[in-house]
Every structure is written in structure tokens, then in C-alpha cells.
Amino acid sequence: DTEVTQTPKHLVMGMTNKKSLKCEQHMGHRAMYWYKQKAKKPPELMFVYSYEKLSINESVPSRFSPECPNSSLLNLHLHALQPEDSALYLCASSQGRVATNEKLFFGSGTQLSVL
Amino acid sequence: AQSVAQPEDQVNVAEGNPLTVKCTYSVSGNPYLFWYVQYPNRGLQFLLKYITGDNLVKGSYGFEAEFNKSQTSFHLKKPSALVSDSALYFCAVRGVSGGYQKVTFGTGTKLQVIP
Image (tube, rainbow over all chains, first blue to last red; front, side, top):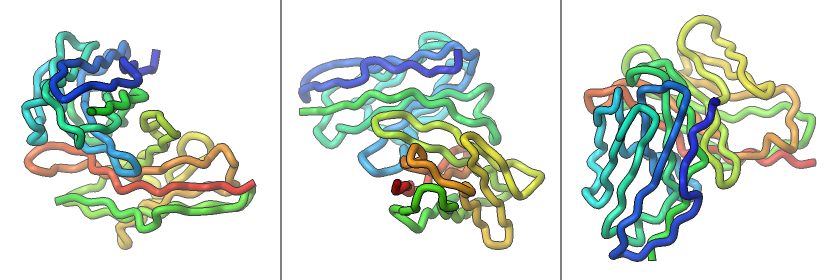
């Protein structure tokens, strides 16, 4: 299994809603990432977990809350989002620690629309 | 700070012709360079990477990239383009930014292969 699976594929939410994005991989990877991608723009790093510990937070607003319950799962909890948060949210994983030469495996993303 | 420049927003090439997608980078220390491809509504897929060694790197789907240290470039190439190669291509560099290892993506180049 060489896949990173993200659910849901599409999500529409109001600004007062609470929702969660889920990401799962069974490749034994120990680093997992959340990226945000606006249309026709490069992915922007949000969070990195290394061995289930949050190692990087790119100054992301607190309305985004990551969680790594175990080595295979990564969640992104959303609360009180703004319309400008509408984007494609990508999960990725890599094999070991946040190392220099490892490729990233990406999921297909969750297309989020905030109304 | 590290950066990646992809000077062309879009590259058009006729099917069967060679293609080149340009990338230049700036990073402290040794560069770790990657190319990823993104199809519509999908996550990024790894194509190839340069860590060390031969300047010509071969990757997936017949793509290759040439590392040129003096020109700080890492151009993506393919001898004969296919219509199915039409997609968004991202160059990326991995290095230390803000005190930790981080991948920085270029702005992307849309490749259009014309039948």
C-alpha cells in the first residue's frame, strides 16, 4: 500500500461549523504533513508531525488544530473558519524523521469551501 | 532563506517534441532538489530528485532533470512529450529555513502538450 488517503474529498462548511479532515497512511511513515494549496499556487506548509509529535507549526491560525492520534493517522480540526480559508488541503507523509532527501507522498486532498 | 523560481507559468509543446520546464533555486548548503507533478484535483506525485552524484537524474514516466550547480538550475526534460503529460509541474528544494528542514515549492508551470 503506497497511498495516502484523505477524507472527505470535498467539504462545504459555514463559518460557525466545526469539522475535521482525516488522513491515513499504512506505509510505516513517521513524518506527516498538512499543506494548504490555493488554486494555481504552490502548496504551503502548515504543520509537520515527526514520530507523532508536532515538530513544525508554520504560524498557522488557531482555528486550525492538528492532531496525530497514532503513527498512521493525522487529523486537522477546523473551527470558525473564514472564507479565505477555502483551499485544497493536502496531507503528505515521508519515511522517517524530517530528513533532507526523502520524497513526500501526497494524498489527493480535501477541497474545502467556507461559506 | 531558500527559494525556487519557475519562470514560465505555462509551457506549450507539440506531442512528440522534446520538452523542458525550467527551475532555478537558491539554498544554503547542498541542494536537495525535487520535481513533482499534479493532475487536476489531485495531490502531488513525486517524479524525481537530486541529492548527489550524476548531474542527470532519471525519474518516472520518462522524465529526467539536469542539475547545474554553476547556474543553480534543475530543469525538467523529456525527449518526446505525450498528451498525457499535460499537468502542473512543481520544482522544490529542501533545506534549512527558519531553523528546521523544510520543502519550498516553486510557483508551478502548467505544461500543455498539443496533439
